[in-house]
Image (tube, rainbow, N blue to C red; front, side, top):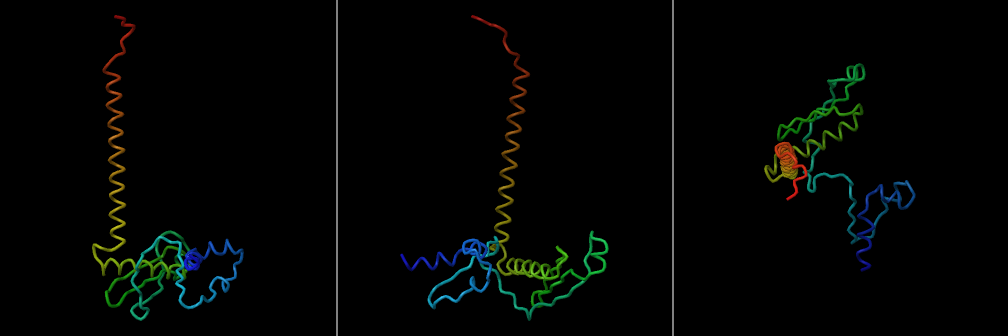
Length: 169
């Protein structure tokens, strides 16, 4: 019983720990655990369970000017990240924010997802989640259409069958 307590203490997210301890000192949050204790920090983000590891030596990174709306902020800054995975030839272009650091991080996340799809194929978590989402959308759309058809038939039945007025037998 007491052996499971360290696991519980480590499983909470860093933000949750800050809220519980009332401290934002990162060194308190990352204190060294005794050997033999398994400590898993939950990222709090719904991502891949087993993401492929990116080797920085296999990546070629460029910073180019982005495109799209934004005017001068877009036209004069090179904050669009183009990331190329040399062994596979996959190229990812990310210009979601103005920040180069955030774009670099997001480009690497997208690259991990694409490599996961390349390596695992149809068994990739991303494709499985996408298929599940599409099936849920189809089921929802089917239910909506059935409901609309029932309402239409009910209205037709009401208009076709006039109410009997005081028919007493």
